[in-house]
Image (cartoon, rainbow over all chains, first blue to last red; front, side):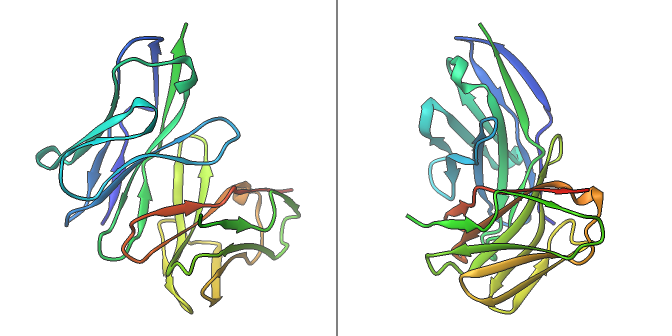
Length: 113
Length: 112
């Protein structure tokens, strides 16, 4: 069965520091992988997605993620965090057969000035 | 752009009431989904549908049912609302291949 684990419920980083949010998935075939961001009171915004090809994916707002099949991971990174990046981040995996989309529990990012 | 519209932004219902949450998409997507979002639990899949009159249970279907009579409309039904169903409910749609998902703005349901 599909599942997604985000091991870190809450992360605090200083503005300007680098960021890595972890995501591990369980899925038998090649998955489609996504990262979404949700600011307080807002809807979900797609940051980036991986379907196939280059395992390093560039997204919006300076984010990138790397698909590592051997580790079943799709970690999100940003070299320098801005205060406006404070939000909740969700990793998700979709079945390439059915399109069924499953989310992780989310990681809340706090940015210190 | 694909639009997914949820009929209500906020809803307050009484325990035991039958509640209908409606979702309409305008881009001929095959797949439609209902999630509930709770703090610390992320988005959990309640039901999804990959075609008209077809449905499949997600991770937390208990206490819910769905209806998809037309391709563009996917309804979530709470047969007898309970306070533990107070939550934010999100609808989404996608092509069957899962290439792109579009989410509605959500319905915040409070059951009193």
